[in-house]
Amino acid sequence: MLLGNHYPNIYLKCIGDLSVLLGRKLPLWLLDGFLSYIIPIPPENKTIFFFKSLFIAPLYFCLLLLSLPLKLFLFPVYAITGKYRAPYTYTQSRQTKNKLLQFKKNYTVCCANICSISEMCGRLNNFNHVRTRCTKIGNLVVRSQFADIALSKITINEDDMDSHITTSFPPSIDFFCFQEISDIARSGASSLIGQLSIYFDYFVYNIGGVGWTTYFHVMDSGLLVASRYPILNVQFQPFSHACDGHNLGTFGLVSVKVDLGITENGMNAVGYLATTHLQAYPGSNELHQSQLNEIVSWQHEFQQKCQMDGEIVAFDVLCGDFNFDNMSPGEKISWSHKLFDEYNDYCKVKPGMDKLWTVGTEMRLPMVWDEQVSTPEKLKATLD
Image 1 (cartoon, rainbow, N blue to C red):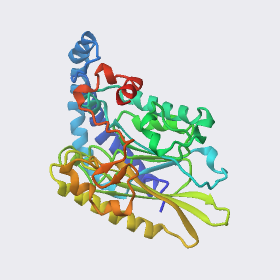
Image 2 (cartoon, rainbow, N blue to C red; image 1 turned 90 degrees about the horizontal axis):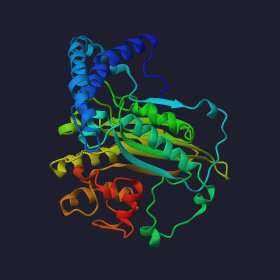
Image 3 (cartoon, one colour; image 1 turned 60 degrees about the horizontal axis):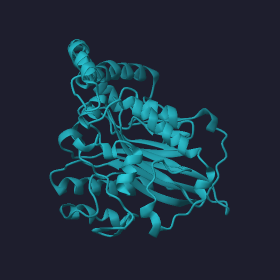
Protein backbone atom coordinates (compact mmCIF):
# COMPACT_ATOMS: atom_id res chain seq x y z
CA MET A 1 0.00 0.00 0.00
CA LEU A 2 1.29 3.45 -0.90
CA LEU A 3 0.47 6.12 1.67
CA GLY A 4 0.20 9.69 0.43
CA ASN A 5 -0.14 11.41 3.81
CA HIS A 6 1.73 11.12 7.09
CA TYR A 7 -1.39 11.02 9.25
CA PRO A 8 -4.96 9.76 8.78
CA ASN A 9 -6.53 13.20 9.40
CA ILE A 10 -5.62 16.87 9.49
CA TYR A 11 -5.92 17.16 13.28
CA LEU A 12 -3.36 14.45 14.02
CA LYS A 13 -1.15 15.92 11.31
CA CYS A 14 -1.11 19.37 12.91
CA ILE A 15 -0.47 18.04 16.40
CA GLY A 16 2.09 15.50 15.25
CA ASP A 17 4.03 17.80 12.93
CA LEU A 18 4.14 20.62 15.49
CA SER A 19 5.27 18.34 18.32
CA VAL A 20 7.97 16.75 16.15
CA LEU A 21 9.20 20.16 14.99
CA LEU A 22 9.36 21.77 18.44
CA GLY A 23 9.93 18.70 20.59
CA ARG A 24 12.39 16.71 18.48
CA LYS A 25 13.85 18.61 15.55
CA LEU A 26 14.38 21.99 17.24
CA PRO A 27 16.48 20.62 20.15
CA LEU A 28 18.43 18.44 17.69
CA TRP A 29 19.09 21.40 15.38
CA LEU A 30 20.31 23.47 18.35
CA LEU A 31 22.51 20.62 19.61
CA ASP A 32 23.81 20.13 16.09
CA GLY A 33 24.59 23.83 15.79
CA PHE A 34 26.36 23.96 19.15
CA LEU A 35 28.58 20.95 18.50
CA SER A 36 29.33 21.96 14.91
CA TYR A 37 30.88 25.17 16.24
CA ILE A 38 33.20 23.43 18.70
CA ILE A 39 34.41 20.51 16.53
CA PRO A 40 37.25 21.73 14.27
CA ILE A 41 38.28 20.21 10.94
CA PRO A 42 41.63 20.74 9.12
CA PRO A 43 40.68 23.12 6.26
CA GLU A 44 38.85 25.56 8.53
CA ASN A 45 40.32 29.00 9.21
CA LYS A 46 41.51 28.94 12.83
CA THR A 47 40.62 32.56 13.51
CA ILE A 48 37.07 32.17 12.21
CA PHE A 49 36.63 28.91 14.10
CA PHE A 50 37.85 30.56 17.34
CA PHE A 51 35.33 33.38 16.87
CA LYS A 52 32.48 30.93 16.27
CA SER A 53 33.37 28.69 19.21
CA LEU A 54 33.74 31.69 21.53
CA PHE A 55 30.64 33.68 20.59
CA ILE A 56 28.18 31.65 18.50
CA ALA A 57 28.49 28.25 20.20
CA PRO A 58 27.42 29.62 23.65
CA LEU A 59 24.33 31.17 22.05
CA TYR A 60 23.33 27.78 20.61
CA PHE A 61 23.98 26.16 23.99
CA CYS A 62 21.73 28.63 25.83
CA LEU A 63 18.94 28.14 23.31
CA LEU A 64 19.39 24.37 23.64
CA LEU A 65 18.91 24.57 27.42
CA LEU A 66 15.78 26.67 26.94
CA SER A 67 14.36 24.10 24.51
CA LEU A 68 14.76 21.11 26.85
CA PRO A 69 11.59 21.74 28.93
CA LEU A 70 9.65 21.99 25.67
CA LYS A 71 11.13 18.68 24.53
CA LEU A 72 10.19 16.96 27.79
CA PHE A 73 6.65 18.34 27.58
CA LEU A 74 6.14 17.34 23.93
CA PHE A 75 7.93 13.98 24.10
CA PRO A 76 4.78 11.99 25.01
CA VAL A 77 2.78 13.89 22.37
CA TYR A 78 4.95 13.06 19.36
CA ALA A 79 5.60 9.55 20.66
CA ILE A 80 1.86 8.82 20.83
CA THR A 81 0.89 10.57 17.60
CA GLY A 82 3.85 8.83 15.95
CA LYS A 83 1.96 5.53 16.22
CA TYR A 84 -0.45 6.87 13.61
CA ARG A 85 2.18 8.41 11.34
CA ALA A 86 3.22 6.77 8.07
CA PRO A 87 6.85 5.62 8.29
CA TYR A 88 7.86 7.60 5.20
CA THR A 89 7.12 10.63 3.05
CA TYR A 90 6.11 10.04 -0.58
CA THR A 91 6.07 12.79 -3.15
CA GLN A 92 5.98 13.14 -6.92
CA SER A 93 6.52 15.92 -9.43
CA ARG A 94 3.40 17.63 -10.77
CA GLN A 95 4.39 17.13 -14.40
CA THR A 96 4.41 13.32 -14.06
CA LYS A 97 0.67 12.74 -13.85
CA ASN A 98 0.15 12.19 -17.58
CA LYS A 99 3.62 10.84 -18.30
CA LEU A 100 3.69 7.82 -20.64
CA LEU A 101 5.69 4.87 -19.37
CA GLN A 102 8.07 3.13 -21.70
CA PHE A 103 9.18 -0.36 -20.81
CA LYS A 104 12.80 -1.11 -21.69
CA LYS A 105 15.15 -4.05 -21.38
CA ASN A 106 17.83 -2.42 -19.23
CA TYR A 107 17.62 -0.21 -16.15
CA THR A 108 20.31 1.65 -14.21
CA VAL A 109 20.33 1.67 -10.40
CA CYS A 110 22.79 3.80 -8.41
CA CYS A 111 23.50 3.61 -4.70
CA ALA A 112 25.49 5.98 -2.46
CA ASN A 113 26.06 6.70 1.22
CA ILE A 114 26.56 10.48 1.27
CA CYS A 115 27.02 10.78 5.06
CA SER A 116 24.65 13.74 5.45
CA ILE A 117 22.98 13.03 8.76
CA SER A 118 23.88 16.36 10.40
CA GLU A 119 26.64 18.97 10.49
CA MET A 120 27.83 17.53 13.79
CA CYS A 121 28.12 14.00 12.36
CA GLY A 122 29.78 15.42 9.29
CA ARG A 123 32.48 17.06 11.39
CA LEU A 124 32.99 13.89 13.38
CA ASN A 125 33.66 12.28 9.98
CA ASN A 126 36.10 15.08 9.14
CA PHE A 127 34.03 17.18 6.71
CA ASN A 128 31.50 20.01 6.89
CA HIS A 129 28.79 21.97 5.06
CA VAL A 130 26.28 19.10 4.99
CA ARG A 131 23.43 21.04 3.39
CA THR A 132 25.72 22.53 0.73
CA ARG A 133 27.10 19.06 0.01
CA CYS A 134 23.58 17.68 -0.50
CA THR A 135 22.83 20.43 -3.02
CA LYS A 136 26.12 19.87 -4.85
CA ILE A 137 25.65 16.08 -4.97
CA GLY A 138 22.14 16.46 -6.34
CA ASN A 139 23.41 18.93 -8.93
CA LEU A 140 26.22 16.56 -9.99
CA VAL A 141 23.76 13.69 -10.42
CA VAL A 142 21.42 15.77 -12.57
CA ARG A 143 24.22 17.26 -14.66
CA SER A 144 25.47 13.75 -15.40
CA GLN A 145 22.04 12.80 -16.75
CA PHE A 146 22.05 15.67 -19.24
CA ALA A 147 25.58 15.03 -20.45
CA ASP A 148 26.28 13.73 -23.95
CA ILE A 149 23.61 11.09 -24.56
CA ALA A 150 26.11 9.11 -26.59
CA LEU A 151 27.73 8.09 -23.32
CA SER A 152 24.73 5.94 -22.47
CA LYS A 153 25.28 3.91 -25.63
CA ILE A 154 28.79 2.83 -24.66
CA THR A 155 29.08 -0.79 -23.58
CA ILE A 156 32.14 -1.45 -21.43
CA ASN A 157 33.65 -4.90 -21.55
CA GLU A 158 33.77 -6.34 -18.04
CA ASP A 159 37.44 -7.27 -18.51
CA ASP A 160 38.32 -3.61 -19.15
CA MET A 161 36.37 -2.09 -16.24
CA ASP A 162 39.47 -1.67 -14.05
CA SER A 163 40.54 1.23 -16.31
CA HIS A 164 37.21 3.05 -16.27
CA ILE A 165 37.08 4.76 -12.89
CA THR A 166 35.10 7.96 -13.38
CA THR A 167 34.56 11.17 -11.40
CA SER A 168 30.98 11.62 -12.60
CA PHE A 169 27.76 9.71 -12.11
CA PRO A 170 26.64 7.39 -14.93
CA PRO A 171 24.08 8.74 -17.40
CA SER A 172 20.52 7.45 -17.79
CA ILE A 173 20.00 6.60 -14.11
CA ASP A 174 16.51 5.20 -13.50
CA PHE A 175 16.68 4.75 -9.73
CA PHE A 176 18.95 6.20 -7.07
CA CYS A 177 19.13 4.86 -3.50
CA PHE A 178 20.80 6.97 -0.82
CA GLN A 179 21.91 6.22 2.73
CA GLU A 180 22.62 8.67 5.58
CA ILE A 181 20.43 11.52 4.40
CA SER A 182 18.48 12.35 7.55
CA ASP A 183 15.65 14.72 8.43
CA ILE A 184 17.89 16.43 11.02
CA ALA A 185 20.52 17.44 8.44
CA ARG A 186 19.23 21.03 8.34
CA SER A 187 17.02 20.39 5.33
CA GLY A 188 19.62 18.11 3.74
CA ALA A 189 16.99 15.78 2.28
CA SER A 190 14.90 18.63 0.87
CA SER A 191 18.02 20.25 -0.61
CA LEU A 192 18.95 16.99 -2.32
CA ILE A 193 15.41 16.39 -3.60
CA GLY A 194 15.21 19.98 -4.80
CA GLN A 195 18.03 19.22 -7.22
CA LEU A 196 17.07 15.65 -8.09
CA SER A 197 13.48 16.60 -8.96
CA ILE A 198 14.79 18.19 -12.17
CA TYR A 199 15.37 14.64 -13.44
CA PHE A 200 13.66 12.19 -11.08
CA ASP A 201 9.89 12.19 -10.60
CA TYR A 202 9.09 10.10 -7.50
CA PHE A 203 10.66 10.16 -4.03
CA VAL A 204 10.38 8.22 -0.79
CA TYR A 205 12.22 9.87 2.11
CA ASN A 206 11.94 10.74 5.82
CA ILE A 207 11.86 6.97 6.23
CA GLY A 208 11.46 5.66 9.77
CA GLY A 209 8.82 5.46 12.46
CA VAL A 210 8.19 7.76 15.39
CA GLY A 211 7.02 5.87 18.44
CA TRP A 212 7.91 4.43 21.84
CA THR A 213 9.79 1.42 20.52
CA THR A 214 11.25 2.30 17.11
CA TYR A 215 14.21 4.41 18.21
CA PHE A 216 15.36 6.97 20.76
CA HIS A 217 13.70 9.85 18.90
CA VAL A 218 16.94 11.16 17.43
CA MET A 219 17.24 10.09 13.75
CA ASP A 220 15.24 8.34 11.09
CA SER A 221 16.72 5.60 8.87
CA GLY A 222 18.62 8.01 6.62
CA LEU A 223 17.34 6.14 3.55
CA LEU A 224 16.00 7.88 0.43
CA VAL A 225 14.78 6.47 -2.89
CA ALA A 226 14.51 8.54 -6.09
CA SER A 227 12.77 7.02 -9.11
CA ARG A 228 11.88 7.99 -12.66
CA TYR A 229 9.08 5.42 -12.63
CA PRO A 230 5.88 5.48 -10.53
CA ILE A 231 6.13 3.85 -7.12
CA LEU A 232 3.24 1.48 -6.45
CA ASN A 233 4.03 0.14 -2.98
CA VAL A 234 6.39 0.97 -0.13
CA GLN A 235 7.31 -0.97 2.98
CA PHE A 236 9.76 -0.03 5.71
CA GLN A 237 10.91 -2.36 8.45
CA PRO A 238 13.35 -1.35 11.24
CA PHE A 239 15.96 -3.85 12.40
CA SER A 240 15.15 -5.59 15.65
CA HIS A 241 18.68 -5.24 16.99
CA ALA A 242 21.40 -2.59 16.81
CA CYS A 243 24.28 -1.31 18.91
CA ASP A 244 26.22 1.89 19.64
CA GLY A 245 25.27 4.88 17.47
CA HIS A 246 22.81 2.87 15.38
CA ASN A 247 20.53 2.74 18.43
CA LEU A 248 19.86 6.43 17.80
CA GLY A 249 18.24 5.80 14.42
CA THR A 250 15.67 3.56 12.77
CA PHE A 251 18.10 1.67 10.58
CA GLY A 252 16.35 -0.98 8.53
CA LEU A 253 15.13 -1.91 5.06
CA VAL A 254 12.89 0.05 2.70
CA SER A 255 11.34 -1.91 -0.18
CA VAL A 256 9.51 -0.39 -3.14
CA LYS A 257 7.57 -1.77 -6.08
CA VAL A 258 7.74 0.32 -9.26
CA ASP A 259 5.56 0.41 -12.37
CA LEU A 260 7.70 -0.08 -15.49
CA GLY A 261 4.90 0.18 -18.06
CA ILE A 262 3.56 -2.27 -20.63
CA THR A 263 5.73 -4.78 -22.47
CA GLU A 264 5.49 -5.50 -26.20
CA ASN A 265 3.32 -8.50 -25.31
CA GLY A 266 0.86 -6.33 -23.41
CA MET A 267 2.00 -7.47 -19.94
CA ASN A 268 2.26 -5.16 -16.93
CA ALA A 269 5.95 -4.95 -16.00
CA VAL A 270 7.05 -4.15 -12.44
CA GLY A 271 10.33 -4.04 -10.57
CA TYR A 272 11.31 -4.51 -6.94
CA LEU A 273 13.96 -2.28 -5.40
CA ALA A 274 15.19 -2.30 -1.81
CA THR A 275 17.91 -0.43 0.03
CA THR A 276 19.32 -0.80 3.52
CA HIS A 277 22.03 0.31 5.93
CA LEU A 278 23.48 -2.40 8.16
CA GLN A 279 25.23 -1.91 11.47
CA ALA A 280 28.67 -0.28 11.35
CA TYR A 281 31.34 -1.89 13.54
CA PRO A 282 28.92 -4.53 14.88
CA GLY A 283 31.47 -6.04 17.27
CA SER A 284 30.26 -9.54 16.46
CA ASN A 285 29.00 -11.30 13.36
CA GLU A 286 25.77 -12.29 15.10
CA LEU A 287 24.35 -8.79 14.69
CA HIS A 288 24.90 -8.75 10.94
CA GLN A 289 23.48 -12.26 10.74
CA SER A 290 20.32 -11.12 12.48
CA GLN A 291 19.90 -8.14 10.17
CA LEU A 292 20.56 -10.19 7.02
CA ASN A 293 18.03 -12.79 8.16
CA GLU A 294 15.42 -10.07 8.58
CA ILE A 295 16.16 -8.65 5.13
CA VAL A 296 15.56 -12.04 3.49
CA SER A 297 12.31 -12.50 5.41
CA TRP A 298 11.04 -8.96 4.72
CA GLN A 299 11.80 -9.19 1.00
CA HIS A 300 9.82 -12.42 0.68
CA GLU A 301 6.94 -10.95 2.66
CA PHE A 302 6.81 -7.70 0.67
CA GLN A 303 6.89 -9.34 -2.75
CA GLN A 304 4.32 -11.98 -1.86
CA LYS A 305 2.02 -9.25 -0.58
CA CYS A 306 2.45 -6.94 -3.59
CA GLN A 307 2.58 -9.35 -6.53
CA MET A 308 -0.53 -9.17 -8.73
CA ASP A 309 -1.85 -11.60 -11.32
CA GLY A 310 -0.77 -10.79 -14.85
CA GLU A 311 2.41 -8.97 -13.81
CA ILE A 312 5.94 -9.84 -14.86
CA VAL A 313 8.91 -8.93 -12.66
CA ALA A 314 11.65 -7.25 -14.70
CA PHE A 315 14.13 -7.00 -11.84
CA ASP A 316 14.60 -7.52 -8.10
CA VAL A 317 17.48 -5.35 -6.80
CA LEU A 318 18.83 -5.08 -3.26
CA CYS A 319 21.47 -2.43 -2.54
CA GLY A 320 22.80 -0.29 0.27
CA ASP A 321 25.60 0.12 2.79
CA PHE A 322 26.23 -3.38 4.14
CA ASN A 323 29.28 -2.41 6.22
CA PHE A 324 31.18 -5.58 5.34
CA ASP A 325 33.01 -6.84 2.27
CA ASN A 326 33.39 -10.08 0.35
CA MET A 327 37.06 -10.67 1.14
CA SER A 328 37.88 -10.00 4.80
CA PRO A 329 38.38 -13.35 6.61
CA GLY A 330 36.82 -11.93 9.78
CA GLU A 331 33.57 -11.26 7.90
CA LYS A 332 33.28 -14.66 6.24
CA ILE A 333 30.11 -15.54 8.12
CA SER A 334 28.48 -12.41 6.66
CA TRP A 335 29.53 -12.81 3.03
CA SER A 336 28.58 -16.49 3.21
CA HIS A 337 25.01 -15.68 4.27
CA LYS A 338 22.09 -17.31 2.43
CA LEU A 339 21.03 -13.86 1.19
CA PHE A 340 23.79 -14.12 -1.43
CA ASP A 341 22.23 -17.34 -2.73
CA GLU A 342 19.12 -15.33 -3.61
CA TYR A 343 20.82 -12.13 -4.79
CA ASN A 344 23.79 -12.04 -7.12
CA ASP A 345 26.69 -9.83 -5.98
CA TYR A 346 27.85 -8.57 -9.36
CA CYS A 347 31.23 -7.51 -7.97
CA LYS A 348 32.33 -10.96 -6.84
CA VAL A 349 33.65 -14.04 -8.61
CA LYS A 350 32.76 -16.28 -5.69
CA PRO A 351 32.53 -15.99 -1.90
CA GLY A 352 35.85 -14.58 -0.71
CA MET A 353 37.02 -13.35 -4.16
CA ASP A 354 36.05 -10.14 -5.99
CA LYS A 355 36.36 -9.46 -9.70
CA LEU A 356 39.59 -7.82 -10.82
CA TRP A 357 37.98 -4.49 -11.69
CA THR A 358 36.59 -3.86 -8.19
CA VAL A 359 38.29 -1.18 -6.09
CA GLY A 360 38.12 -0.90 -2.33
CA THR A 361 37.61 2.71 -1.20
CA GLU A 362 37.41 2.51 2.59
CA MET A 363 39.41 5.44 3.91
CA ARG A 364 40.26 6.24 7.52
CA LEU A 365 38.93 9.58 8.73
CA PRO A 366 42.33 11.28 9.35
CA MET A 367 43.13 10.77 5.64
CA VAL A 368 40.02 12.50 4.25
CA TRP A 369 41.86 15.80 3.71
CA ASP A 370 45.07 14.24 2.42
CA GLU A 371 46.28 16.16 -0.64
CA GLN A 372 46.40 13.00 -2.78
CA VAL A 373 42.64 12.38 -2.39
CA SER A 374 41.37 15.92 -1.76
CA THR A 375 39.41 16.18 -5.04
CA PRO A 376 37.49 13.64 -7.17
CA GLU A 377 40.15 13.89 -9.86
CA LYS A 378 43.00 13.27 -7.41
CA LEU A 379 41.15 10.34 -5.84
CA LYS A 380 40.66 8.88 -9.32
CA ALA A 381 44.35 9.29 -10.08
CA THR A 382 45.26 7.57 -6.79
CA LEU A 383 42.94 4.64 -7.48
CA ASP A 384 44.14 4.35 -11.07
